[in-house]
Length: 290
Ligand code: SD4
Image (cartoon, rainbow, N blue to C red; front, side, top):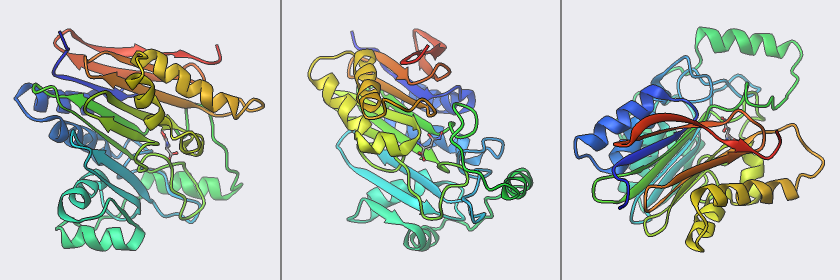
């Protein structure tokens, strides 16, 4: 019997998963669950890699990436969006209210205001201070697990057995202005196929884009691999291209139509949260390097 409803989410985001679970348990659909779930992190100023309170680019501007995808393969995305707390909801509006899939930068921001979203300063006291400190050396590093890796990717199956997913981030801290990562790129940071399952990614987005990671994992599941084995193969594919590099983290998370889940990462430390009627758990995943 397929496990449903069920929600999984990258990292240990307790409140976000709780919210999504609440939506699913009250009969809500997977699309609403993932949107409302990740919105919790977007609004949380203490999460410095998502939404308000996210770390800025090297010019001091907070620029957000997000996408959402539903059971019918509809999707919406915003890239490099400023001054809006909930990019995932703007992405959903792009999906539902326009004939397009991706809106970028100023155009995305203008669209958001037209849709009734409020303008808000996303830099907080804390991230402003950290940025000023960073400016003294202006050294860009992708520190494993700590600095850059709290993007939230969420996958859910509702009581009807339908799958949706969402992914939202402020991207890599102190990135070059205009840089867009994997998180808002359909197939890279997130992919859903209602017949097969879904996958999402966190970590150094450039490496995920180069292998179209989430799409790859869903296709591997279509060929019969378990979510776990598919995530392992996804990371291996990345490591084949990076034989000399150990200084970055990637975490993949996947779910199949039966509600089986799995995850895998480059370095130890990536976890995911899973809620179903079988229990509420935070799962450690195995990694490519010990
Ligand atoms: C990106 N994948 O922009 C995102 C960063 C990330 O936790 O996952 N941070 O490349």
